Image (cartoon, rainbow, N blue to C red; front, side):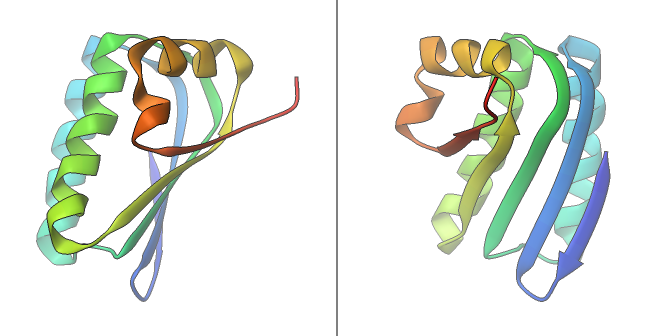
Length: 103
């Protein structure tokens, strides 16, 4: 996970497989980051994510729920088609802006 913050905008870059173990690690890292400052706009760059299971979906929903009460917005960009399918099946596309890569 890489993080870049510019004012109230934060970009988090995820790579690899977001499964149970990766989600637990990322959840802890995000909590540490949010102690410093909660962004108004959170962009998750997912171009490097090759697989996401239900733990990854839960992770993203958890991040969304932390931002929503403070008026923050969250967007997923660079989502690969196979990962986007999991998001559509879960209904994640109903609450988040998901930008897929052509593929």
